[in-house]
Image 1 (spheres, one colour):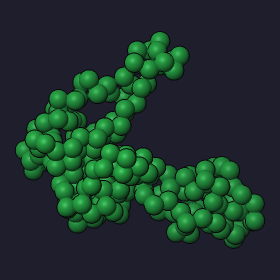
Image 2 (image 1 turned 90 degrees about the vertical axis):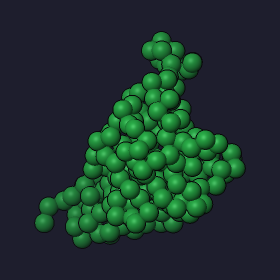
Image 3 (image 1 turned 90 degrees about the horizontal axis):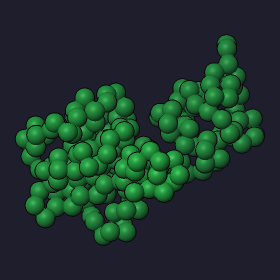
Length: 196
């Protein structure tokens, strides 16, 4: 048999559900190949070569879940029993976080498609809206407003979509948005790391 990439072999052996989670475990130094800590997902491994996980593994399907979990705790926002809109869902780290924290229903919205982790895609409390651009989204298309809107958007300024995000949130609901300076600052400021 031919050698395979480590991340793909981890999925084949059911050590990680996705390549991004395999990469995360490798980045955390929690993967041993033949007794040596693996540092690259692209490393080629033999089919019979031992691969061992040394840590507990990630809590969420992506690192976004850790970021949101910390923010929810910091700001005292509790998703338990709430309807949540996750805008820019991607792999679903934010969706996974709020589901684990007891959200009643999650609307996972993303302009892309095929990225949401299978466990979330098939979860009974998650409703998936792919190929959906929040700039043109009407609230009734996703079943009405949410009690909590979380957003992690790339390649677009929040200035362009903030009114749509606010429209997705019920009055007196919570809106928690990850701000990415590279999409908010001008090119010069972003290049210098100065932000806006």
